[in-house]
Structures are given as C-alpha cells and as structure tokens.
Length: 436
Image: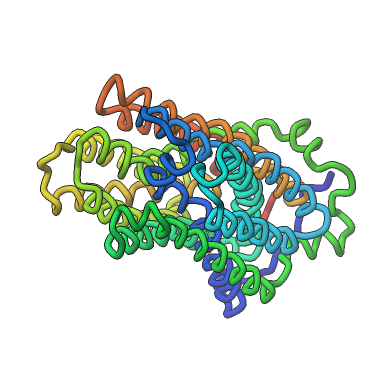
C-alpha cells in the first residue's frame, strides 16, 4: 500500500479553511452536547429509571448506562471508519451526527420506570448504545476531516480549534444544566424539566446535519480517489496487521484523554465535589462550567504551542502542569472552601486539561491516509470503550480508599502520555508522510 499523499500547498488559512473549521467545530459542539448531557442529570435519572432504596446502587446503575455509551463506541466507530476510508470522509461525518440526534430526542420523551416498569431502563440503555455508536464515528471522523483540510504548519491550531468546539459541547451541557437548576424546583425537574435538555439536544443534532451539507470532501481523500489509492478491501485488516505501534500510541493517548475528561470534567462536580466534599451543587456546576470554558481555550492554546515547539516539548510542559494543578485542586477541597478559590483552582486545572489535544494531533499523524480513519477510529474507540467505561466505576471505588484518587489516576496517565511523546512515530508522524 502506498503511503504517499498529495496535499494542498497553502501554508496559511484561507476563507475556505476557516469555513470548514467553523462549521465542523460548531457541529462537534452540538453533537458532543447530545452525548454528555446525560452525565449532568445522573442524579435525577437514577431514581426515575432505576428505583432503589440504596443510593450507591442507584448511582452505579446510572453510571452503568453512561458506560454503555462508551462500550458501544468501537462498533459504530469501526463501521463508519470503514466507509470513511472507502467511500469518503464527508458522508460518514454527516451520518454520525444524524445517528446521534435521534436517540437523544428519544431519551427526552421516554416513559419512566413508574410508567412502564422494566422496559424504561431497557429503552434508556438502547438509546445510550445508539448514542455511543454515533459518537464513535464522530470524534475520529471530525479529527481526520480537519487534519486533511488544514495546512501543515497550522495542523495543531486546526485540530485544537475543532477539539475546542467538541469540548464546547460539555460547556453547553453545563450551562443548560445550570439554567435548569436555577429555573425549576427539584420537584419540577424530577417531574418534567429533566426532559428539556434532551429534546433540545435532538433539535441541535438535526441543525448540525443541515450545517454539514455545506462542507467539502477532504483534499487528501480526493487525491486518493484520483490516484486510485482508496482502500478497496477491509482497511481494518491492514491497521492491525501493519500498524500496531500506531494503534498502541493512540490507545495510550486515548487513555489519558478519557481519564482527564471523565474524571476532571464529567465526574468531579457530582461524585467528588458533591458526594465526597459536600460542596453546594450549584457552586459545583458553576465552577465546572468555568473549568470547561478554560478546557476549550486550552485546547486551542496547546494546539498552537505544538505547532511552534513540537509535540514532545508541549507534552512535557502540559502534562506536568496537569499533574501539579490536579494536586493543588483536589488536595485543597473541603466543605468550607471559598467560591473564588474553588473556581480559580478549577479553571487552572481545566486549562491544563486542554493538553489532551495532543491525542488527536499525534494519532492522526501516526497512520497513513489510506487507512487513517480506520486506524484512528479503531484504536481510539476500542481504548475509549475500555477506559471510558471502566473509569467512572474505578474512580468511585478508588475514592472509597483515598480522597486524592483523582490525583493518583491523572498523574499515572499523564506520565504515560509524556513517555509516548518521545516515540519517533508520535512526534514525527508516519515516516513516509510529507504533509500530515
């Protein structure tokens, strides 16, 4: 298989680049909102779909549904990546968001356990599985799409901006959660208001489908078609027979990304700030929103830094900063912590979480263009299916042993990521690639 590719010669971002980046980032924001809004309402959904006198079991059941979404990612991701490598990136980029919008809307109108009994949690799990399959194609597809549209010297900025848009979906979810908490009483939320974010999410998804009609196929895939180098058989076979090192690099980097997002951004407000340290729920959510905003800013910042000084130096600075800021934040938590201190420390931590942008930057470069979508999607989604699904349960167990569970876990994966950044394939990219 040839590993050469032709790439547009521009070194600066054109109006077309900016349009593509803007529409892709906005679509990513809306789709990832659909996927993560679930976690902001776990404490509400638990009693409604998994009634139990044991609060811990209720939380485990609800987090299990959250994990089901992650476990479904590999199947959806691998299938969509196959067609992304054989018939085009754009088609799968549009399909993934359509498949996300439908189950999100359905969750918003699902009957509860009180209304239809055991069928309620079953339907919730099925919808979550569909969401997981859709996000499995969206994330790698979006990164490949932008990587193959962005000029070489702005690669980090392009992927960083897209990733910022995707993490913006978490921020959007957090803001809507705050709005729901401030607008409705607990009784009103339990009765009907919890449905609003999911119904909105379905609407957001269909808007994204419309927006992506205006995107063009990537120059790299067009070149592969013109040169008759598009994969004709099963790209996934080539991935696992010839590119195991790239898969390993991607899997380890994905472990780091999933840990940072799941533990610091998604679990901390409820499972750590609320359950462990008894910090006010509204304050926790507001601090989380600011931290997520800083995460989105950090993704662009660290992407630009990688363009300037390279991935290895960026990894050293960013991940060491993540270790230090996580210790400062989690070791300083207590019920009487001041709001300004909590928010400041959480914001600094959120900014360093932005270093996770190195995962797509390194991983898209590690695979040749003919099988790039399949390689990235299979390695990323298999790793996220394992680590993203296990991390919530593992973190809750670890919290029962030490209040600094998050610090130990984050430090471990950060050191792994730094080690990976020294591997030549990680910081140079595929050895025969001249453009990506």
